[in-house]
Length: 194
Image 1: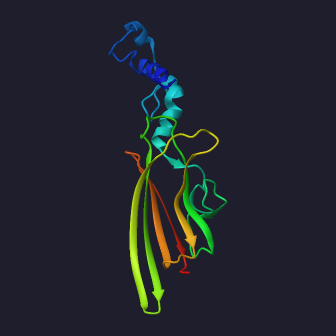
Image 2 (image 1 turned 90 degrees about the vertical axis):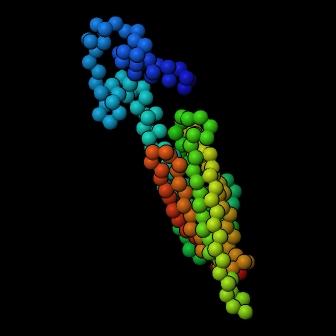
């Protein structure tokens, strides 16, 4: 389907351009295309590829307003969305997750996101306090998952509260790696020491 659509679009765009022209000069002279001001497309071309082009330009987006952040539980589904940032999580198991709207075009690996985290752990003992910081960075391929749900990255990070190794405060940055317009979403979480 994509190949056929590409051939139709290519033919429509090149028919009167002079390259591989199969339409008579008279037919091109009589044609008065209505161009889309933003893309340089005729109204016919806009009807064919406009929605697809809009999706490509938008790139990877959150599925909805509760699709990136911290949730209760640690499975594929979000039991309860707590927000992009949460502090001093009560005892329990949590996760950082993302559900993303991905354009329905592109080869495998065309759409990617990058998760970067930085966690500071403060451990208090009878002998004093120690502070350590750790960072991580990982890229994920995402793909179109249909109209019913987004591409799920769940869990991206598992979180347990309280944390035996010390009080932990973490920040995250999730970035869509769109070559023209990368988008970034940020948040944080913290848990007490057990």
